[in-house]
Length: 312
Image 1 (cartoon, rainbow, N blue to C red):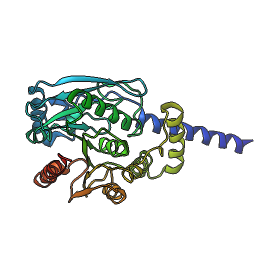
Image 2 (cartoon, helix red, strand yellow; image 1 turned 180 degrees about the horizontal axis):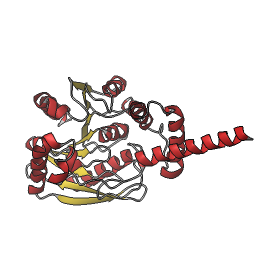
Image 3 (cartoon, helix red, strand yellow; image 1 turned 90 degrees about the vertical axis):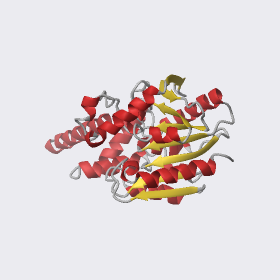
Image 4 (cartoon, rainbow, N blue to C red; image 1 turned 180 degrees about the vertical axis):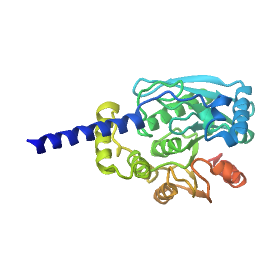
């Protein structure tokens, strides 16, 4: 009888641990507003806070509009659209986990603008002004990419060149979406430090943060909770499967010093990709810092990618 109670106690503890892991990773939570100077300057962004604030101001100065769309599962999604008066195309930029496009692309937005692009900066589901309770690590977000492409194609016309870009979870999202048959005006994808699948990134992060814990068992329980409460499975989508089917050119970018999303994940996606592709590895760059670490090289690769694929 004592053994039974011990077993039940362990089971309850594991179920609680699995729930807390799911809740910590997947449930929407309010966080500090990183568009405010005081929050930026008291965060890991402190060394680049000035340039980030300047980039945000740049975006606001160009009369951005708020656009909305209803997702396939009924959520109201919001985005900031920054029109360019002489646009040669439009870049849709998807942000990372528990972040925002205004933060993630604050420093690179002026560069993209100088290249002659309209900018669409969506709040991914369960972030910012977009609705949603659960973050699905690209599984459902990839369908939202499809929705925003439809909005831009309808607004700007079937001939307007569109590029999809993403950082971290946003990169994984656009890579997972790359298997879709988008309108002909989608010309290419830029993926900076994306992970391979929800399962693999959770496993990698857990092993780094909770080495004494039974990661495999926690992932099994977490997958149960994501299925029951959030409606998706951790192995439901993979960038590797998607890029093996895609027809779109892809520019992969990753820092070799990334300890959050291992650089090998972009290498694996690059190896699996069957479309035209290029991989830029930035030596020593930490997570999502490739642009800052070697700006000339990343800008040159991006410019060449735009120029090469702007016209079919």
